[in-house]
Image (tube, rainbow, N blue to C red):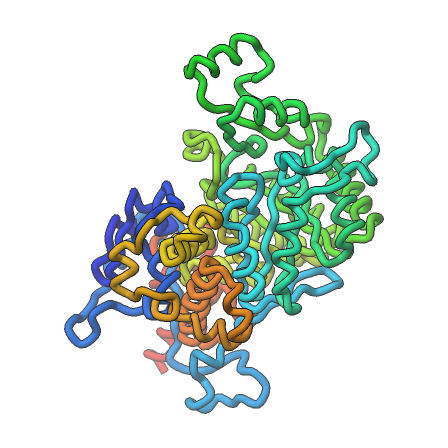
Length: 550
């Protein structure tokens, strides 16, 4: 494994077990540090380099690759050439510098959505952790200029939302304070880059979420159909600890386990034997038996959403098998969808059955490799392929580069879930510790700054490396309204962007559109076989021998 519990070179450590992504398998909102993502939320691009410069030397420990994963792909570097330099730049050494790498991209079929860097958030839905820290995620994402996704069930679990009875969808939702808050928070800082995406599942469709969003916000939002995610192969879940809330959700039409309407369950809860209830969403498409039926249903759904006025429609799918993967790519392409996000196992979660998460579905690198193969089949037939976004266990800048290159030229974005939530947690905790009067209101978890933070600084201007960059962007007056979690998100994104620029410059690719599969090689033969990326010792071997024999 590339990632162990601690990294002496960077001075980072994981509180729990390190996953393939470098994050802890269990990431806590109250964590006092300090994994690589946690610390980069504070010190930013400084964490790209070994610590204690002038006193140390450092050597890589990831040169032996075992098994098939993104960590078994390596990034090419070249000793000559340059590709994709921007207007006014030449292949002069003074122009071929990594700060000149352009990370901007765009996605969409007809109406293009501009993005400042090839990153988007995962779907942050009805889990309470998404609700608590939403301001950090949404404001941070808007300021960075990337898409932020509002996940499923936000309306349905909101105690204050008003949903009418019956089957009529238009006008069924009278109000949805939480959904409106989430959309409005993002739009307040939206400047033409990025987008706010609202996701639909079975219950959202029944409740008329699309109709509500279309009427209130129109094309300020992108609407997304959801087929699944990488963390589980059933519908979304949350956990509630109130019997009244469980009954409310049951009356809203959700599956609640155990059933809070049963007398024996009520008694068990009263006595303390049952302390919580799990709310579940329904599986999609149980009434569909053939591929043709799935296609017809999907196409009619997209057509209906467009009839509501949505000019941008996207699809999110999970780590199902090859048939569902092919359907997602083919149907989304035929429907002229604007983006298809594919989430590999094990993904990330706010609440998914743990052993299900460990055992089900197609791991990310296999799913994404086949996605490239299937997209290429469509392209070879002259068909336009839907823009792709890869998700499932990404946290670092090399992950972004590898996934973009593996899926090039079809992949336009990389989706991060848990990694982009960490700065929201740590920033909020810092704000609460420095401003005790805010602590409970913003869901801060610390009473005082831990040493992991105070060693860096004792006020926001000292702690966050990107504080003054962000202040320049929004102005000194507005900076007072930016939550510290958003500042931390902006700081971490700056580190990812800088690291990605450096990797791209080393590969001599100075714009996003120039990244290709030729920028990768496989660290072992098994990875070569599964990804189609040649082994390190085979790449350019033929041209190398021509040089020797010239």
